[in-house]
Length: 98
Ligand SMILES: N=c1c2ncn([C@@H]3O[C@H](COP(=O)(O)OP(=O)(O)OP(=O)(O)O)[C@@H](O)[C@H]3O)c2ncn1[C@@H]1O[C@H](COP(=O)(O)O)[C@@H](O)[C@H]1O
Image (cartoon, rainbow, N blue to C red; front, side, top):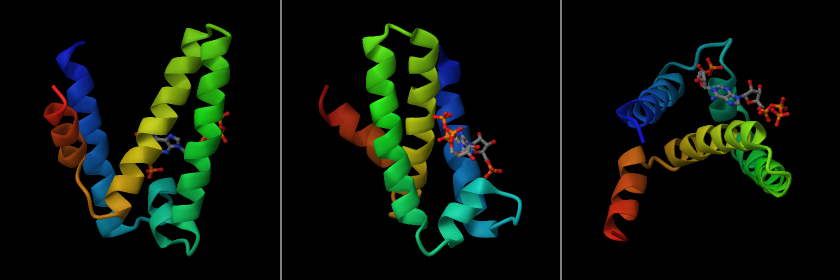
C-alpha cells in the first residue's frame, strides 16, 4: 500500500471535520450534518453501498468494488465524525488487533 492512501484518508477526514464546523451551503457533507435525518441518511447509504459492494465482489468487478469501497469509507468517516469520534479511533482499533 502506498503512503498516499493514508494521507488521502486523513485529508478526507479533515475536510469532513471542516464541513461540520463551517457548514457551507453547497456541501453534501454539511447537509448530512444539518439535516434532521442526516444520520439515518448516512446509515441507509452504508447499507445500500454494502449491498452494491457485495454484488461487485460477486461479479469480480474490481472497478466497481473500488468505487463502492470509496463510498463506504467516505460515509463511514462522516458517521465517525457525527459521533464525535476520530479517524485515529479506527486506526487504534485496527492496531490493537495486530
Ligand atoms: N467522497 C465523497 C463522496 N462520496 C459520495 N458522495 C456523495 O454522496 C451522495 C451519494 O453518493 P452515492 O455514491 O450513493 O451516489 P449515487 O450516484 O446515488 O450512487 P452510486 O451509483 O454511486 O452507488 C452523492 O451526492 C455523492 O456526491 C460524496 N461527497 C463528498 N465526498 C468527499 O467529501 C468532500 C467534500 O464534499 P462536499 O461536502 O460536497 O464539499 C469531497 O471533496 C469528496 O472528497
